Length: 136
Image (cartoon, rainbow, N blue to C red; front, side, top):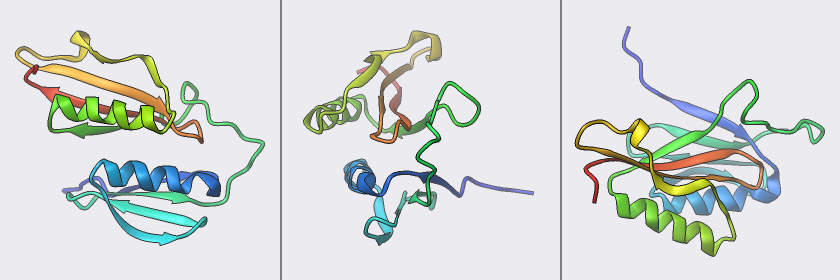
């Protein structure tokens, strides 16, 4: 059997759909499908996709340190793209978390760096934008 990553569905509040659309458009993904305030699908060039929407239970809070997904990582091709993402987030009023952006030598391999920014979406979904490659 040979498989590949397909898609992830992330439940979010309808009022936050614009955040995800703007973020993933900025990151170079394309809009596959959109029903305003209902569902948003974004796709990457490799055929993978993320879908935002669905019915949520307001009394249930996301805890990325509990069972389930901790964070969703999006890899860039240059270190400067991580810095561009930091500037984009700052313009949107989104705070970087965990003392990022920063290099993470504990995740790096010889000759490469692991440079990341981590942040929460308005729905408390934890995201990482990361560059892995030669240090700039």
